[in-house]
Length: 623
Image 1 (cartoon, helix red, strand yellow):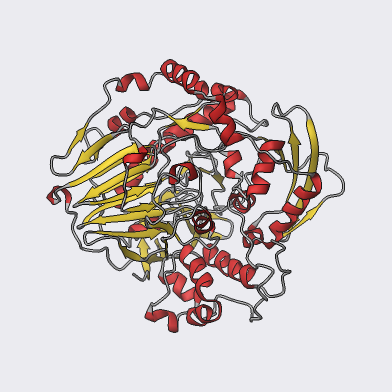
Image 2 (image 1 turned 45 degrees about the vertical axis):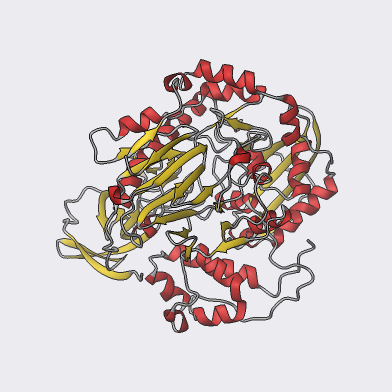
């Protein structure tokens, strides 16, 4: 579906309006603002995870993670991102703005109660089993052991016996270990079809191949794939640029939008027909922030945690309104921290319960399906098959702390946490220098970083490495800066595991295995994106391809002809589903992006990533 530039008349008198003014145009939320340079529409959608920002009087603030943005420009205050902006002109006693709009929304109706024989079972956390007419689809299976290097365990424990599961297909949304869990996957037949997003980094495919799976099916973003006679999947990119995915499951017309923890994507709401059910995260905690950041006081951490929990509930309300869904399945929250050093966080952290979600939608048309592990919802009756009798007890903090103490297993913890190898200073320096071959470094902010390899208690430093990133280039510093922009303390064993096993740094960050301090207090999203899923874009055995610089005027068909599938993966990650589209033969990148509702900031980033990936003048990777 192409987005059409539409000129809107905004009936507000410039002389009388009190700015900023919240408005909605083309099904998208904005603030109309005034600055020294004139008037603009500033998007209310936070670029982190799609939550709507609010006006707190001094700036715009996202209640989910506390990102703040300037009133007049949308520029980040405590982050390096920006809210997208659209220029506005004054015409007499009103405003005019050209906004990209979808020409229509699919008229296909919700099927709702008409579907029979559909059963959706929550095994635990993000693992759903969708059963329909003899076909079983399993999503994001983490069913045994722990995640994030021994940090997370299930809470409550799953009831299912993994050996009894025989899924016909598996969907994995991203590589975090609570979704791509190798020990769980070891229990499944290696011929089982596994569907994954076709991320440019290909890390999921490589990981599954290493596990011996023979039928790995990468899904291009926006591509509708048939799993069985009755079930189709379509994979969509998240609203942010993190490596995650949203999947639309169509079961004989009954539509389940599995958002998981990917956040809201406002753009795809215009592409989709109304969905029947949204499945989404409802608890915070998948981040080391704020608990492992030493520049924050305890009071600040507690307040940030409270705002995050409340912000997530507000996001659920926005989500249900945006996607026009009848049912909400809150899930991806059956976890807790288990290590003795993390139990303080459990006691202090604000969270949400299933009852909180039910109460949130009381009196509305939304029907919440509050499943606990092992419970199922059946479409034929619209009822839940219950197995838990002590539901209220699970929300009691003292009960949870006793559970953690009883279920902490030192031997199991060591299996996930310990690293039999080590890493030296020179090896770590070489590792960081290889980040110069990761395309995402082009978007990294200017930053100085010191990494201290420590003992488990963080007190004794074994060695330190400092580096700077300037103009998309990382250099090792010969002298440690007195006050780096980011100080990261990480136990040597965890550091060695990340480096030697090529893990995402999120495994340590989300696992609360690091300690951080930053100066100034600005979140460098580009740097964390670099560490989330590093990949090296030119193997040494492949000669570079000489090409002309890619610009917004490059014709999409020419780009695909020259650079093939890798270019298509990058385009798809930005929401341009161009392969096979007849418009790609004459549309430029800028025109195609505009027709897909992308703003100028996103187009600029896309062009930079394409050039960074296919730049023949860059040195080849040593990986």
